[in-house]
Image 1 (cartoon, rainbow, N blue to C red):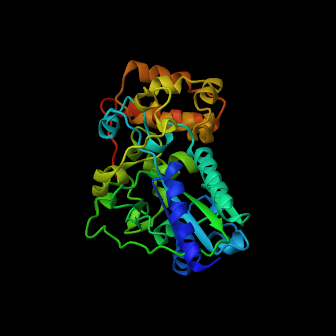
Image 2 (image 1 turned 90 degrees about the vertical axis):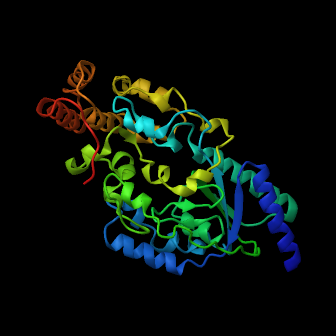
Image 3 (image 1 turned 180 degrees about the vertical axis):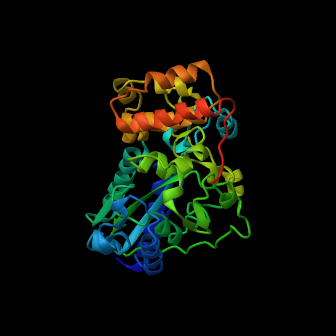
Length: 361
């Protein structure tokens, strides 16, 4: 295929991506040497914590052709997920009796939705050029998605390590199509964080240890989602009422003034989780948890860690009869993990009754 035809195809792919609900698509090559070296340094410092999967697969994560042989280009896409609703995240964080759940997890799980859209994009390409080699990814394999997206011109990696787009902020998901089509590549954009350190300063656990450097072991998203065992006590107070993830670094980012809400109905909050009462969520048995989190990213937690996280939030909430009753009802839970965190929460109320507040460590 002549290069001019590849250029026309690249333009068409971006248009098809928008028609399929992606807000932007970009194309890059597979050269990630700088990102690979930075990633290896990050691993060497142990910043991935107990996420052993981050250190697996050798160079496949940073060398796309080793993960999917024949890959010469990556089509990177982004999809807005900020739901169009009236909830004020800052007000939610300030109401210690309610649960704060990261915005991305309030609706249906994005993995299947985006993977299906990427598959449809591949089908459109195939209709245009015939059979070609490709593989779609949405957090489903070892992929350095943010460096790839940055190289493809979708934005720059901010000091909080999330991708930022100057016209859309950072409230979006990323996905990729690895392909053997030698398409023309897009140019990356410059870094526009400047001297701003808002995300570093706001982090409740000081997880952003330097610009562009995150110690996941301190990150509330890691502590409440990825960590399977006990949450270190030193971080529990700072977690506040965050029971699944943390959006603080995005909420404070000036570029999110330009964030666009999503028109995807699947990303709208479900089961009132955008304004849920902690004691009500804590009362869910496992069957209720599984039913209410069907098709949601929350399901991945499992009921045990769901209770663990809410116990911590209840320990940080103001002392009330309802909260004390809820905690004592779980005091003899079969899970040692749940019992430990419930015991910590009860001790917090016993030793320091009254108001609670998150803090920094």
